[in-house]
Length: 286
Image (cartoon, rainbow, N blue to C red; front, side, top):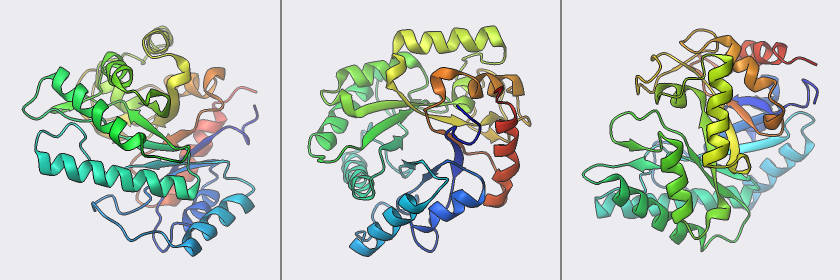
């Protein structure tokens, strides 16, 4: 696959209209973008109008660069919430976001699994899987919910491949549940991808536990925290604790050429992603 074809991009804004995200992606040299389908700080949103949906689809269809679009849920959602009110709001909000993705034709909706406040791991996993099933069994579209690996900060769940496997296996709707690897998060959680040997060992472990077909999205983020620090703080590529070699290995891993790779690194403005995208593309060995 050529440097032009590889699915690489960044999270971009939907300010001024969701359809504008396509243009923003083109401007930074992306072939794939990630968006919020609504405000990430709100539980609710106005229903998408047929005009908004059509403008987004037309922009995407007419784009010569953007091949794929991925969505990310609001950070407010916690499917493992012990508090009934918070759990109920989380289910309603995720259902809303899933519907928006289906209306827009977005195939993947990335979700942080949840937080185990006042619960055991087993209780949290059971609650997450049950809530995922209740949402997905009513979905009529093709959008999959993609569980993101977490850094293990606080009481968050999903920082081990085994935890994600347990959640998926407990789901009756597992065919619509995928996984997203975040490089910063797995490194902070203790998966040593800092060497070539370590990288291949971790990826082999992922395939053995979850299976490569489950991987739907990759978040390319360097880490401000050390290996195993459980600190969820993203750094720019080459500016954190993960060596550039690791990102080169990912960019040249043939297993991942057709998987969307998204930057969520700290930038002042979206045009700052241009240099990082160029840096990653330069790593590709033709």
